[in-house]
Length: 417
Ligand code: NIG
Ligand code: FE
Image 1: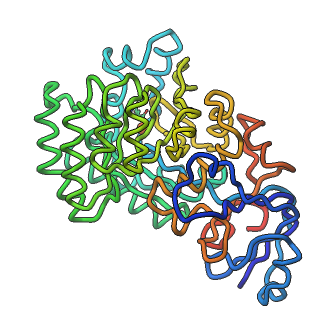
Image 2: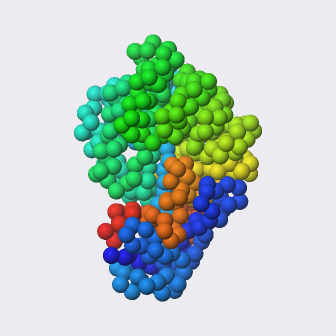
Image 3: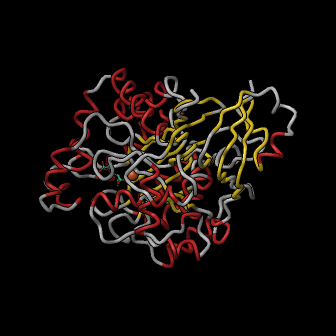
C-alpha cells in the first residue's frame, strides 16, 4: 500500500545530477516548503509541493501519515567500525588522563586491544550485538551504514566479522555494506612485520573474502606504525583486481601519502583527510575520489586540528560525512552530532553538511544511483525530524531530533510504525 507523508514543513530532495556533488552543487538542497512525499513498493513515487503530490493517481488511496517537521533522505553513514565486542574503557581512562591515540597504542591499547574479545566472541553473539546497534542507527535517521572488519586480524576472525555483517543484515532493516579492513593494524603474532602480515592478508584473507562475496570494499589504515603508502597502493590494486572497491584511512594523524596512494589505486573514498595538503587534494579531485570526513572522531580525541573542508570543497572534491563509529576514536552512531561537528569545527554550511551526510555518503558507498535523494524512482529511504527548519539539525547538538525513519518504503522507527 502506498504511503503519503504530508504536512512536511521542509523537504530537502537533493534533486540534481546522478553524481557526487562538488563545489557549489553541495549547497543545492532542493528545498521544498509545505511538502509531501508519496512512496510505494519501496520507491519514491512523488515528492514536492503538497498540492502537486496530492494530485498523483496513488495519493487518494494511500495511507496518510501526517508529519510536522523536516524530511531528508536517510543518512548514508559510509564509514563505521560497528562490529566490536567491548567498549575500550581503559583507553578512555588513559585519554582522560592526557594520553594521545599514539601513547595509548604504545601502551598496548588502541586497535589491538579490541582484537582479543573479537576473536573470542562467537558469530551468533557478534551478529546479535550488531543488529542491536543497527536499531540505534535507525533511531537517529541513518538508513544505510558501511561496516568494517579489522578487529579480527586473522583469517577466521576477519571472515567472522564479515559474516556477522551479512547475518545481521537479515535481522535489521538498516542496509549494511561490508568492508574488509584486515589491514587495520599488525597483530602481535607477526612481531611488528607489517609486510609479512600484509602478504598473509593478500594471500589468505583477501581472496577468501572476495570468493565468498563477503565484502564490497577493501580498506587499509595508511599511517606511520601501521601501513605505508607503497603497501597501500599494492594492496588496494590487488583488492580491486579481485573485485573489491578500494577505500583508505589516510592522513588521519599525519601527512603520510595514503590519500595519493588511494587515489592512484582508484579509491572510491579517502577517509579522515585531517592532514591533507594541496597535492593530496588535487589527487582526489583528479581521480574522482570522495573525501569522507569524520569530525566526530576529532572531537572525541580532543584534537585541535579538523579536516580542511573549505579547501576541499573549493577545490572541487566531493565531501562526505560519516560517524567513524568505533570503540576507540568515536563511540558515536548519531549522524546529527557529525553535522554539528562539521559546521562548528570544519566551517561547513548546514547545506553542505546535509549533502555530505546523505547524497555524497551514498556515492561514497557507490550507491548514489538509488540512494541519497528524494526524487521519483529513488529508494524510499527517509528520515523525519522534529524541527521547523533544516538548519536546526546542525544547530542543536548532542540530541536525537529524528522522530521517524523509513527504509525501502516501510516505517522502521517512530510514530507511524
Ligand atoms: O577510523 N584509524 C583507524 N581506525 C579507526 C580507529 C579504530 C580504533 O581505534 O579502534 C578510525 O579512527
Ligand atoms: Fe575508521
